[in-house]
Image (cartoon, rainbow, N blue to C red; front, top):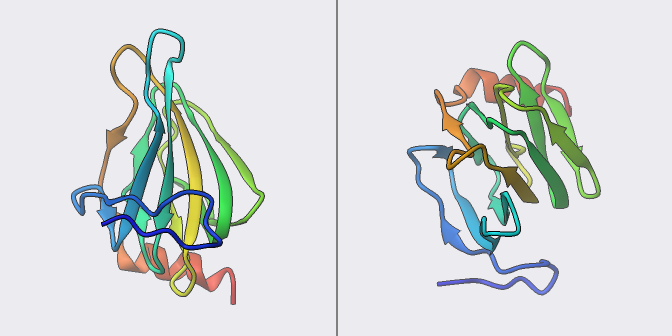
Length: 139
């Protein structure tokens, strides 16, 4: 069942698979790839503690944070706190993850480019230790 928070830009959407997401994350599709657009866009809601697995995009991705607080981290770098109003431009084939903090939800619009019919390669889960370390940066 879709939920609409009066303060949210879009409905919460449908729960995403725990095969690629840890915790409770939800997607509302906004636009699909078509003859005019080589990308898709969706509103992703991460409940506190929810995050993606590590992953890459063959043609990059842009995140527009529209609500709450969370993290973006590239492999081998420190996690960066992100908040409402932030725009994250993720280069192609860059291993990364993003999600909420341990205590706050985060919503972003994900604009993901395609290369042929591929837009994401899912990798390993973000470990509890990696997530705990990211959360230390905000305390």
